[in-house]
Length: 189
Image 1 (tube, one colour):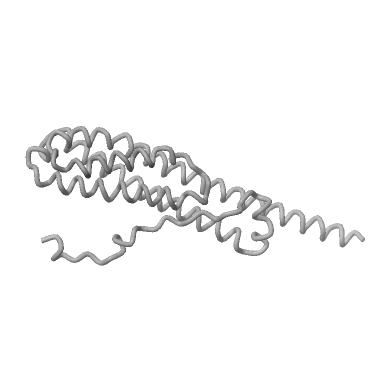
Image 2 (image 1 turned 45 degrees about the horizontal axis):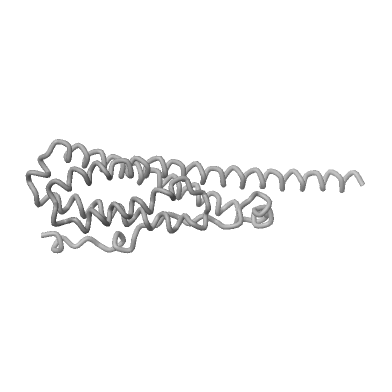
C-alpha cells in the first residue's frame, strides 16, 4: 500500500514538474514576442519620420509611401498579440513592411540630395539598428518556440499541454521565400 502511495505521489510530482516546465516555456515564448513587439514598435515609430522626410523628395514614389503607411496601420493593432494562431499573419505583415522599407531606402539612393540629408541619414541609421535588434529578438523567439515545442511534444508533454493552456503551438519565424534564394550579383549591377 505504501509503495503505491509513494508511486502515485512520485507520478503526480513528475506530472506537476512537466506542467510547470510547459507553463514556463509558454511564458518564455510570450516574453520573446514582447521583445519582438518592443522592437517592432520602434520600427513603427520611425516609419512616419522616414516617410515625412522622403515625401519631400520622392513625389513620384507616392504608391510606395502609401503602401508603407497602409501596412503600418494594419500592423499596429497586432503589436502585443499573444494568440499563437495569429502570429504567422503578424510576421507576414511585418515582413512586407521590412521589404518596402528596404525598397524605399534603395529608391532614396537615386536622390543624392535625399541621401545626404542629415535627417534621412539618421533615420536610416536608426532603422538599421532597429532591424538588427528585431533579428536578435526573432532568434530569441525561435529558441523559445523550439523549447516549448520540445516540452509539449515529448511524452508526457502532450498530455499536460492542455492543462498548461497550450492548445496551439506557435509558429517559428521563417524568412520570406525571396530571402532564401541565393543572391545573384548580376541582378544588382
